[in-house]
Length: 269
Length: 276
Image 1 (cartoon, rainbow over the protein chains, first blue to last red):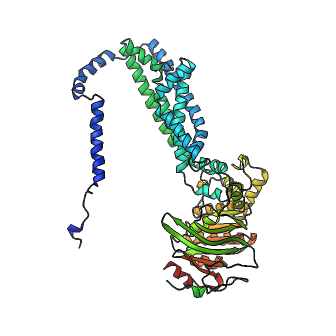
Image 2: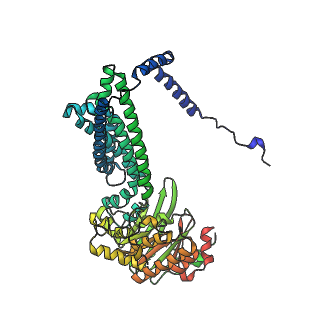
């Protein structure tokens, strides 16, 4: 019979290094709260102010003329998102081939490409919008370019990760027949990665729709400008209408994306 | 472990064998060789998989490579094709040094070989016909061979002929992931044979199949390779397969080639010692 004293401990005692790691994590958390000006007093005193804003914002502005104007702005927002995401996804494919380790190119090319993609992702989409507003002027085209480059940064990296993660068996089968690297990528790696690409692309589209709703804040087109004007003019009912429209559209796009992901990947796997 | 050395007869004409353990390279002076491995050693990190392994494959013969799990059978097969670099020794494939071959030279050598793996290694979402056409990529590079839709007529015909040989021409349009295990392995064999290779490497070709499908696949595979005069080296955990389908049996154990004997001279009990 098993002796109780011989049972393993229920909880593993952390090593000295792990203990130091946990302690450092907790210290960094409080340091961050302090640096970010976190104030419990402000949190507790905010509900009355929030209630005041809500009382001024509700009911939202549902005048037909306002709804029509905001509706067209929302259409423009979706156009920015779809156009930018579609071009970004297409451009991401060759970029991802450059970034995939052990596929076609050597480590110098893959490392350089991944570094560039890292830089693209490190710059927020709103900052890219500011850059493109300067480059091509105010309006939705700057927004399309901002979404496009943001999508390349996102999809380029994740497409490459998807390709690195596929089963290497089919690639090895073709390598053994003397196939070239490009042939192997086209015939084994890309087809095997396609379901993951679809999933990543749909997520990129959701991300693009969310991003495109705020690009108007810096003049890059879309419904964001209406939000800014609403708050600037203390027209909270109209601002609330914009917020609600954004929420509804984003939720709808996410639901559509989930449905499409299931439909496409579910059938193709 | 059973002493296997007594089981090992002289290899072939021209073979000088010291005792029965033939890990020392012995020239088969009168015959052509498709593979010649000499003193091959491979380690992963600090773990030595095998060392000083030497053997030759005579053109047209079928050689079974047997041994317990972890003895490096699959690694050795991949070393022959240059898919895994070796640490020491030399491997000649079809008369050329694989160890130092790179780029176009290595691809040229591999274009005369085929690999049939345990997991079939088909591209799941593509059609059976496209998968078989991919077997021609070593000889014909480029987008025309990426899909059966763009492939030249002669490639489509060659792939259909290969599928007819394995009895699956009627499934040419089906997606590879809709096939049974046995059907997938037949397609993998068709893909390996479509380029008319001189050497085929089969790594446990029936390991993922039920016994009946496994027997069927092995019988069909060896019918085909023998009718086409292809040199074959295959691994199997089925001792009967090694003795039935192999002309010669190589046995790996404890990191060394412990057995190199004609199948006809061996009994199942001689091979069991390799698994002790």
